[in-house]
Length: 154
Image (cartoon, rainbow, N blue to C red; front, side, top):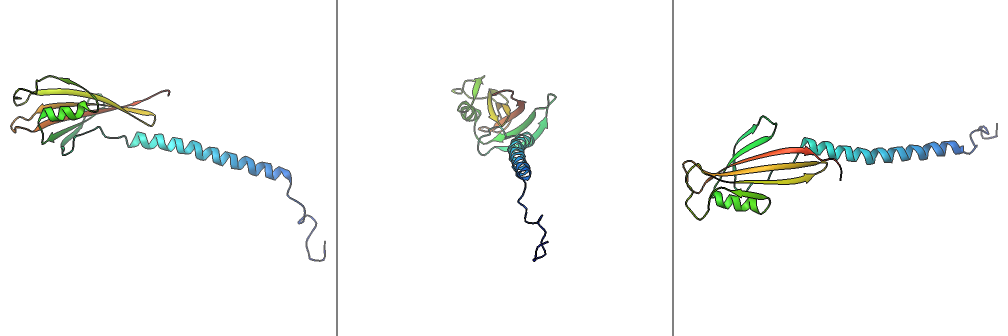
């Protein structure tokens, strides 16, 4: 014992083995944070997928889940079905069933539009069906569905 009441073991340097363990622990923590962030981003994407595109001013009428598990929304849009079709032609592919140069009779399906949107490790496929309203002119009944798929590979 020394005069200050300390033992010689107290003054001994820290063995190199402890530094090795500390560096190893630091590497494991950094790796865990990196992997945890990726797992968290995929989990959040699976729990909160993006909504399919919808024109401004669309009023949601109903939400359903069909037999395949796709989510289906029904909207009323204060524009004619041809204007809604033009909105979807800018972001996807549309198949027109009615000539927009002519008058659109009530309950007429004007177009079916489809598109995809990748996010995280998933892909959202959406489909929009624009039809004329049964009673109001220049109002569209829009049915939008989405399916979320897991994307494997880059």
